[in-house]
Length: 428
Image 1 (cartoon, rainbow, N blue to C red):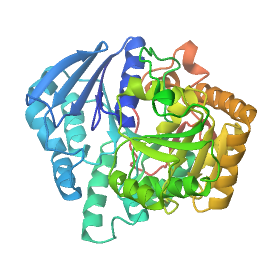
Image 2 (cartoon, one colour):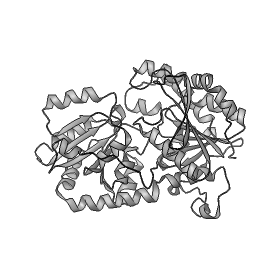
Image 3 (cartoon, rainbow, N blue to C red):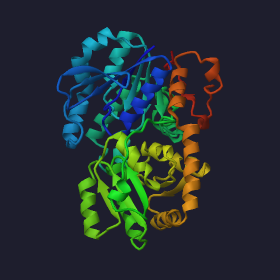
Image 4 (tube, rainbow, N blue to C red):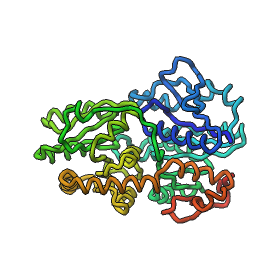
């Protein structure tokens, strides 16, 4: 069947959403389906243009500036996403009806477009929900519960209401929806993040030698550097390990906090940490593969739970995980149960520093945890598994996948959970 994948950015963007949707599209294609990716592109030369990229049909539609824009301008341009995508892409949508719509959040502003396409095509929609906004912005202290918050909540509800199934990324998110949206009858599916079991990696880097890091144990962070990540947490860790000559912290990415953090690093006189610009995905993976430990940091005030996309790259390359996260995050249980890394609550600075010292001084511990991380990825976070799980809700399972996709209310299985009401939505 033809599957429309709607996402707020696509490759060559370095955002995890771009790579996740690309990998999912490839899996659908391998299974004999016809994936079509639709994405806004603020740098597009034409208002609307179709490409073929890695054998996948991609429609790029020019929109207002979102990446790197001020919060007000970004909110305005995101608010107009559904309208802009429909106005400039309506000829394509009319000529290419799909049998299933997959759309990705963030952003929360796809709801009207998805609702309109569902009505026109008579097909179901699956929301891949990776960020619960605006709640995380309130938790992180960048948004207050006022009129703007209520405005965003209204759009959030529109986005959720357009879905037949909402795929949340951890069992803890089921509790969040039960508390806040139980009355709305949403059908929920625990859909973990995913990555391919293999990559065609042709890029070769020599980042370790070029950065003068031979002989160092490098703690690597790759991805967004914003408020929700609380990268001050990592700077404190580097400060606490400044007496360890072999320890080095390499951060690669972009985000709203980069310049402030660079100034803070300079002000503290830290020579064991640096922030480098984001690179394309192939170069990123090649760079990551050279280093020793994968870092995760999340603001401790976050009430919603997520598994950062950067974790996938760490597991793919068998890197042990060193994580400092918000309380109650399911990430801790999964990583510790599989002995794939060391996890602490953000604010436990001494314990985090001691964990980093253990990894720094024990190569065999790093290697063992890294091997376990790779096994964890293959068992729970693979792209083939995610594609099969999504499709199982809309197509009869084959003999090959039936055992893997039996629906269950058990949260640990990552399968469908229905919060019933008399007029609850039904899957197709």
